[in-house]
Amino acid sequence: MKQFLAYGWEAEWDVRSVVEKGLIFDERTVFEGVKKILPGQYMVSRNYGEIQTKKYWDMQYPDKFTKEIRTEEEIVEGVRQRLLDAVRVRLRADVPVGIYLSGGIDSSAIAGMVVHLVNEEGAKLGDSSSQDLSRIQCFTVQFDKDSGMDESDVAQRTAEFLGVKFNPVHVTEEILAERFEKAVWYSEAFMSDVNGAGKLAMAEVAHNGGFKVVITGEGSDEHLAGYSFFQNDALLEKDPSWTPADYNETKFEEAKDKAGTNHVAGVKWSLPPTLPSTTRTLNNTSVAGHLGGMIPLSIASWVLEKYGATDWQTLFADSLDGEVRHAIAKRWHPLHSAEYIWTKTAFQISLLRYLGDNIDMAHQIESRPAFLDHNLTEYVNGLPPSLKMKYKYDSGTFTEKYILREAVKPFVTEEIYKRKKQMYAAPMRYGVDGPMHRKLKELVTKENVEALGFMDWEKTQGVVDKAIVDGDPFAFRAAVSAAQWVILSKRFGVKKATAENAK
Image (cartoon, rainbow, N blue to C red; front, side, top):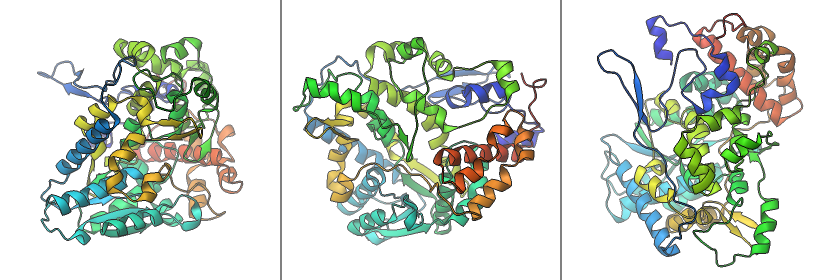
């Protein structure tokens, strides 16, 4: 959006979009008159006439009552070969190609497959035809060891197992605080976390090392059910397409009552109530409820008076086209519906921007997420949901991304194969009067918050100290969110929103 500033555009808040969270799920942005092209769409302008957007692709899932006739072994091989093809294609470049490596199975599988393709098939890695595995370089965010969020030790063991060069990027609290504002400005996106600043620091190190392209692991959790908050929807209904060998009707009903931890990045919250009509439209799925927690916001009273109490979940359900609403209500398994909802909302507006290509391109690096290869995506979207998130009836536990684990087992360590998902998130606990505390106090002030116009200072004041001094994770997310609004306000020079100038 910042490109419009060069043409004399003056940014104004789209307060209705802010309060309705339209910036998450429809074509609106945070600014009045600025729209985005939605996923799977393109824009057409002929002879300076009316601008039109048209859909060229969308995610599809099979009818939940259609029996799967392939064996599990065939499906595993199908995932393996398509992921290998996706990685193989993304090795092509006339510049150096690196890998972003975390302690999770997604990026570890990518790294393992790169090694396999270079070592076994003689594939060329970017502009290098050398088969010296030490020339394959992986970059890893390394938070402080006592933060509870650091995965660098696991990533290092993976790198050593593969024989590739390991480049840990130590991201301290000071580095996060220094790059926090830049991450918001470059991405123009929101996520109530400072992990975008860590990603920015890693991209800077990769750029300084001479890399122009990196292969990344984004998209696996969305398409292969990697998030714990998918558990509710995975067990909402049986999977008629695939009956597990250990299926037990009684235990299935018991599992439905226990499913769903409602944890996101280590924070547990209660989901907001949903209107019965909206619940029916979304087939009782709960993932849409998590979207509200992405951008916690204390709204000013005049906004509520002007626009009323907005049920944004209903607005989101109404934003879906008729075919998708019918598929969610009647055709798709709830897990597939949840994957669709999350991918078209949180994934595209935050993960692919605040943690994705927008951040990497700030240091002239092209991100290549192999899991977003359309051939792979279409294949895994057609798989039985119970093979993505597998429930073990004997132990009462879930194995997320089960089919992926089996597909990539030859390329990863036993530790990675068995490891539970840990979402990439920055630490949420920081010392009093430390760099992060000072940064948030500098941004979240009475003057800055009131200058926004749409946020209630009375409800916002004290949130920074509650976050840092009391160590409250909810307060920390609220403080980060408030700071992000302030950053955009200052960087774009946005005038204060009032009841008179808001549309």
